[in-house]
Amino acid sequence: MTESKKAARYGSRAEKKAADRFNLTLDHSPWHDAHRPDGTPVEIKAAAVERANGSEGRFRVFRKYHDRLRREGGVYVFVAYRPRGTGISVVDMTMTHSSNLPLSTWYGAGGHRESQQRKIPVTAVF
Image (tube, rainbow, N blue to C red; front, side):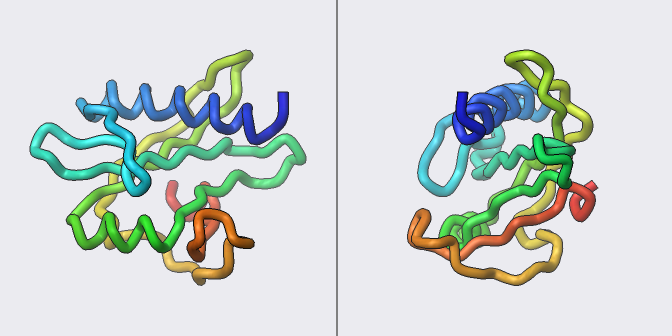
């Protein structure tokens, strides 16, 4: 299985764990993954604490969707995990307002999702 397919599978598992912990309703759109009971949009970001090559994991945030989440008063849930078989073991999880992203620079995403991106190290969040 490719790394991107594994990442997608782990991300789906992280979304379910975040939904359970924070009482979220999963309802994917291009710019958010869920809603809180009060209707607040939530974007869930997952990253392995350590990647297969030994480097630190990073959360990928796309500017186009981040800007929309901010306009709508949304929040992020960040999930740091370790792969365990076909599942994950959550190391840490937190919810934060979209205006509280750790500082970093936006840069080109190589045409992916027609947006700039940030890659935020796990240690910048936790």
